[in-house]
Length: 322
Image (cartoon, rainbow, N blue to C red; front, side):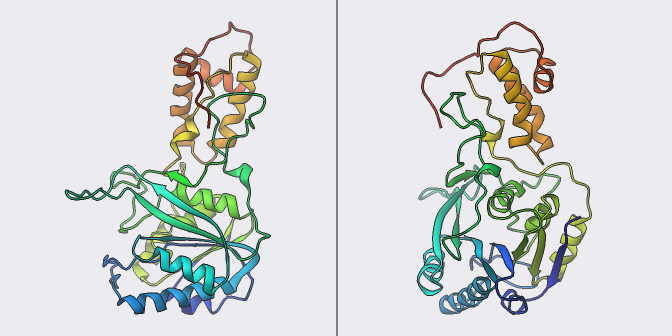
C-alpha cells in the first residue's frame, strides 16, 4: 500500500521541514490570486505580495527536489509569465514544456473570447531528469509498421473535462482538478515508490492519484476542512479515475488483419485504459463502430485469436495521422 500523508499547514513553512533533494516530483496548483473563496482564506493579495509568496514557496520546492526531479505548476494568465521568470532566471531551472490544459466548458464572455484553458509550466532541476514516455502515450490513428503502436507522444495540449458537479467524484472545492490530468504528470515524471509532493493539496486529487499508482505522496493544505475531506476521499472505493483523454478510446482505422487486430486490441486496455475501467465500454463501442462488429465481438477480440472473416473498417480517412 502506498504511503500517503496530508498535513495542515502553510506550503512554504512545511516545505522547509523536508530534507534537501528528497522529492522526486512536485505537482503544484497554487491559488491564482483571483479572489476565490477557499473557506478559511481568500485568494487575494497585493501584486508584490503575491510575487513574494510565489518566490518563497518555489524556492523551497526547488530545494527539496532531487537533481532528477520535475515540477509542474498550474497558473492563470495574470501571473504565469512571472512564475516562468522565477523558475527560469531566478532559480535557474530547466524549462521543458508549457502545457495547455484545454477544457470544453468554462466561464462565458459577451465581449471577447471565453477562456477554455489553463496553463501548466513544466521545469526540471537538471538536464538529467526522469520522463517515462511509454507510460503516457496516446493511441495512433493508423496502424503502420513505421508507427510505434505503443502510441504517440501526447503533445503539450491536453484535453480533459472539468470534474462537473454531477460527477460522483466531485468534491466541495472550487478548483478541483481532473484525476486523468494529474495521472499523466505522475506517470511521466515519477516511478512506483517515488515521493510526490503537492504543496497546495486542495481537494486531494494528487494524493488520490498517487494512492492508485503506487507512489508515496505528501500533501500540504492550509484549510483543515479540506484536509478532512481529502482523508475521507482517500478512504473511499475506487472505480476508475474521474477523467480520461478522449484519444484513449481511439481505435487504429486500418487493422484489417485479424491476428494483428486481435493482438493490438488485447494490449490496448493495458496500455491506455489502465485505471480507467469506466472508459472501457466506450472503447469497445468504438471498436464495433469502426469494424462493423457485433456488440459481443469486441470483447472476444480483446482476449482471443479466433478464426473469423475479415472486416473492413468503416469511414476510412485517407491521410490523417497523429
